[in-house]
Image (cartoon, rainbow, N blue to C red):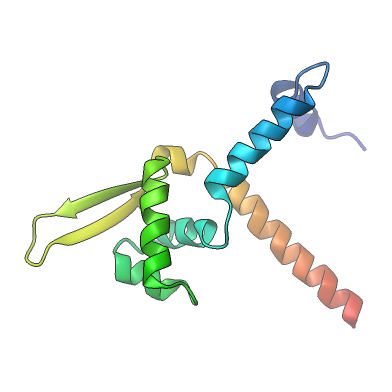
Length: 127
């Protein structure tokens, strides 16, 4: 079965002839930036309106303060998040997704969809 959207994407992204080295490098770059246990849950939390450190931390079960701090710094360095210091007393720090972060929103939605479908598939096979 042919999907015109998928075929167009293949033409746009993959070279002809295929270059395995370039494809692997691109996958590794993506995994480096988005990989790990906490990156996508942090992005999801921030995109769901949790802007302050403690709000983000409370919205992600199991993440430690140290890990969240490290991940936020790395994600800011990779231009996925913007850190804003507000001149309040005490000082308030808020995190927001950048436009660059929003550029892979469709990918995250597809991953969520795939995860839900996968869970249902496994559940159906157990019954």
